[in-house]
Amino acid sequence: MSTVAVTDETFDAEVKNSDVPVVVDFWAEWCGPCKQIGPALEELATEYGGKVKIAKVDVDSNPNSAAAMGVRGIPALFIFKDGQVVSNRAGAAPKAALQSWIEESI
Image (tube, rainbow, N blue to C red; front, side):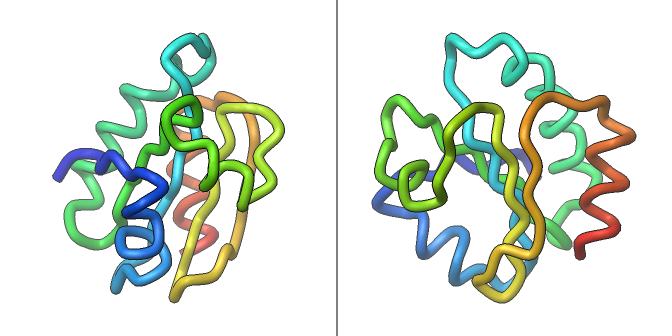
């Protein structure tokens, strides 16, 4: 399973109404740190298979979701479980750090 592109229109269905925990990555094409963590998130999406969904929200194309979550800087990562935010972090991090953060949160 790979990452899922989420829009303002699909945010509730893909994230808040998901039956598995969801890691949401708010990112943009021009953001260097966002590009740094992109490959790690793709790998984690594959490794977690159907246990955890990794969703990516392009803040330039979908400003409403970012605004609703209070995103002020990117990359901004949120973990949703049962429709609620259980953890969040900002900035780039190595794959191992992202994985341990996800494991602790789910």
